[in-house]
Image 1 (cartoon, rainbow, N blue to C red):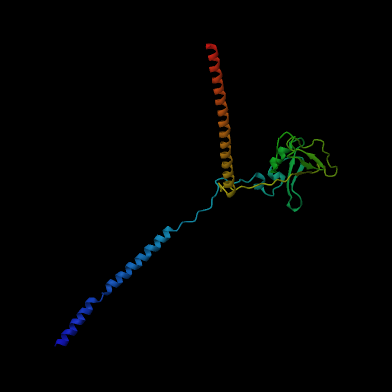
Image 2 (cartoon, rainbow, N blue to C red):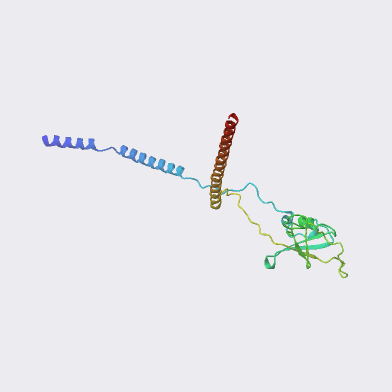
Length: 232
């Protein structure tokens, strides 16, 4: 009987020390919930990629660019003298065909056709807009379509004027960058020059002040000597 009682007591003690299955499941649930919470927190902490800056303004297409490969009549350009603007040479050359009336300013003709010409003074003195037309140089800022052109006897039309315009290099600057490495160095150099100028001006001002004070002391000494002589 004593052995049976001892075995029963041992079985009761073992059952008391074992954990119920519900506690294990609850622990697993807690661990999974903690893992889920940590993963969501990590996802929240990850910084989002910044979107590329898009400027508010955009270059609008000109009338010539929108019209594309339309004829002169379809573009609404009227004139008896056919004109071709050539920019560049070789394979990179671009051609714009238009028409104008005799005596019409070439500056107006180029702007209507969508041909860009770089101007300077606008008086025909600097030669920035100088172009070559049929072996002769002209300046579109002041020149106009010649009125003494001869009409071809066979076709009954004027010969085409080919105006070779100077090529321009357009330097594109991105509006999305407010500073660069070069601008930082330039700013540092300008600040350094400004500080050097302040030190130089301060020294010059100090020197002038000392000279002025020495002159005032000399004047004071001379006036005192003169007063003494007068009293004597």
